[in-house]
Every structure is written in C-alpha cells, then in structure tokens.
Length: 411
Image 1 (cartoon, rainbow, N blue to C red):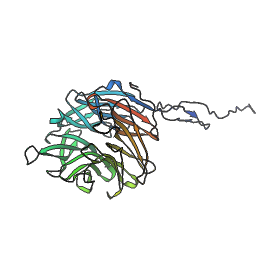
Image 2 (image 1 turned 90 degrees about the vertical axis):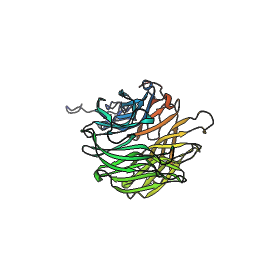
Image 3 (image 1 turned 60 degrees about the horizontal axis):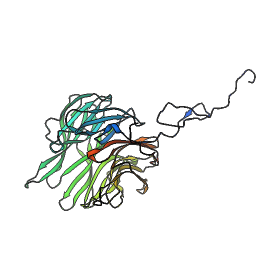
Image 4 (image 1 turned 120 degrees about the horizontal axis):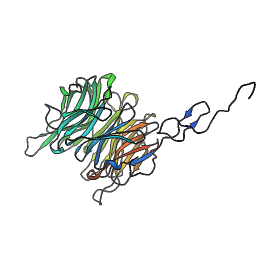
C-alpha cells in the first residue's frame, strides 16, 4: 500500500483459458491467460464396432464430421476437437457415404451409394448440424454408380461426381466413367449435367475435389487409363464450377498405375495432389505428392515407401510452403503372412524433400484418412482394423506427429 493505492505484481501462475483442448494454461503476466500445449490423444472408439470410415469433413464450427458405413448401412458421426463423439447416425437403408460438403446455413450434403456395392445406386442426403436427416434418396435419372466427390459451386448448387461401370464391346468386359451433375439441395434433384469423362480404352475414375469459389473453379482428381499396356495416369482436371467447361488438365504417370486420392491448395495459388504411384501386381506402390503451379504445370514430385505398399489419402499446405500428407503404409511384405498397415504422416518441404515420416501403429491394420489442422498440429480420422472388423480411430497430434499411447476405448 502506497499513498492509498494497491499494487500487485503480475500473476504468472496457472489459469484456465476455457478451451478443453489445451492443457497447462498459464498467466502471461500481462492480464491474459496463455493457452498451453494441446491435449494429445489417440483413441480407438469402442462404440464404433464394424464402422468403416471413408473420410471426414471439417465443419465451420470446428467439429469434424466422419462418414462411411456400419454393417452395410450409411454411417456418420460428429466429433469434437478433443475427440469426443457427439452423435452417431446409422441410416436404415443399405449403402455407405463417400463424400460430404457443408452449406452456408450449416446443412450438410452427403453423397455415396445405396444398396450393395456390387449393384450400387448413387445416393444423396441432406443432414442438419444435429444429425437429423432432412431428406435422403437415390439420385434420379443418372443410372447406377457411386457418388465419390462433392463440391459447392453455387448458392443452391452442388456438383456431384458419379463413378459408374459400363459394359464393354468385348464379352465380359467393362470400363468406368466419371460423370458430373449439378444438384439442388433445396429441390433435392439433379438440375443439369456438367461433364462426362471416360470410355472404353480410356476409363476414368475421379475421387476428390478442391473448389476455388472466388474464381468459380473446381479441381477434380483421380486416375485415367492411358491404354492397356501403359496402365493409368494420375489425372487432374480444372473446370469452370458452374458449367463444367475444362480450363486446364494434366495427366502424370510412370507407365504403371498412378492415382490421386486427395487435392488441396498449394503455395502461391498452386495445388498439391496426393495418392499412390507405380502400383504393381505384387501390391507395391509409393505414397505420392505432386506440386503444381497455377497453370497446372508440375513443380516437383515426391515419393515415399518402404519397398512395399504406401498410399497418400489427404494433403494440406503447411505455413512454410511444404505439405503434410496422411495415408497408410504396409509394414510387412505381401505374401509373408498377414499384412499389417500403419498410419502414415509424411511431411515434405517447399522444395519436395521429405523432412519427416511417421508410421503410427495401433492394435491392427491402420488407414489414416483425413487431416484437420489444429494449431500447429492436427486431428486425424482413421480406420482401425481390417474392413471386416474395423472401428473408428481419432488422433490429435502436435506439429511433429507426437501422440500418446493408444487408448482402446471411448473418450
């Protein structure tokens, strides 16, 4: 006490910033509570038996929507950044979900297939943020197939990418094509055609999209048949979002089988695409990253494997201009007993050099499917176990992919 005034030294003890996803919060001595490091976790959710997740969508709220199938029926789950499952929904009809987008009003559009995979019919649903299904139906007037990707291309317009099989001219032969359609969520119907790719001898399958809304452009990635001798190339097509007209396209391959499964923004307005390169009959492949500039010209290619099978499923741009890829990697040689996969986290710098690669195992086969940025680290949605007996696995890792021991139970 001095001259009737109270004086206090700045407080530097512990505090709580209100964010359950951080721990060790502390006062910074400047009247603020500084967040500590993130709470890391690695959880196999015991209440998701027989769930086969196919991917996830980061929602505007910060939560993650995981989607796929459970016991042959469409399945979705909303997950918080701390790894808690808020709700799960299993539809009554047979099928599964392969893609999802969120509209400006928070409504979620899901795409996938109805019925058995061998006789799939394209399926679309609208879901509220709380998990309530507004409407679900088979996509009319477009035949069979599976909706493999979605993209917001207008206020009330979603581009749906449909992969389907057609019979060839030769007996017992077939080939795949990818068709794009405009679909209205409010009218719940197809309102027009965008494109059709593929044919006999040059089959096409598209798996993912990235939308540049301000430029009215959407990038579609997948694989395209070169010919029966040269296999398939990784295929990237940039189209006008609202019309489907091709702006740029590029095929990249090794003369074997190459495929892109994910695409994202790259540095300086360019793109990153990830997938698998050099598939061979002995189940060999390499996790693959391609960096392209704004004109779709290749800046560099990077590959990673352990001599057996490795796959990149999703990619994101890092602050230093590099890329982070999540996927899966075989840790045993094919044919040498039961094949075991680890989840793969692979970092590449802005020049294409590998700076870090983590193989994160669990209690069974792994597939890291998608990545949501969380501070300097991120949240991963994964499949734990073989398809016949799998569960949902979620991980929160720091910038160096550090995570605690696996917890085989619900958070």
